[in-house]
Image 1 (tube, rainbow, N blue to C red):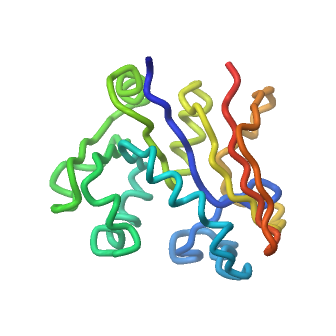
Image 2 (image 1 turned 90 degrees about the vertical axis):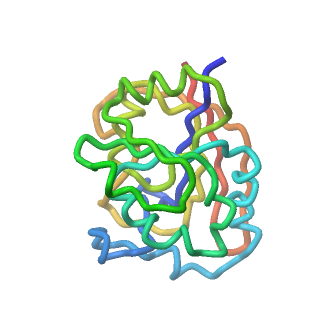
Image 3 (image 1 turned 30 degrees about the vertical axis):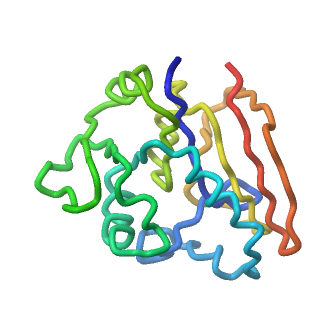
Length: 190
């Protein structure tokens, strides 16, 4: 059985993903998650994900952003020892952060496909919008764990293809919260 590849993230109602680093990370409209009233129940999905995460996957830019914060963050301590895969054609091995568990650089979409055919549990992708889009177009993303925020931006980075094609999804789980956030967990239908 193939490993499941899950993209998880915060999106607006019109599908734009957020970057908690906002403008510093190149997202002109980023940081809107922090403008929504905090409701711990709405973020319970993140804790649930930890229980099934066997490895993490990042694109180069997201890896660099997370690797500068997560290794020393107590909020992300559960991620420290998990294997991490960075998909990049340019990142060099000496750029990997020490003391953040086993890390491996994958150079291509084909490398990701081979990883999925190996043994192990679910691999979760946080951020990494361009990578998620490329892997989804290659048919490698199996599930989307979304927290949809009551925000419309009209434009911005998205993990969803703008190429006209139909991709069917099956709702696995959903919930709505008092702050307007909606949890939507979708399996990709093949």
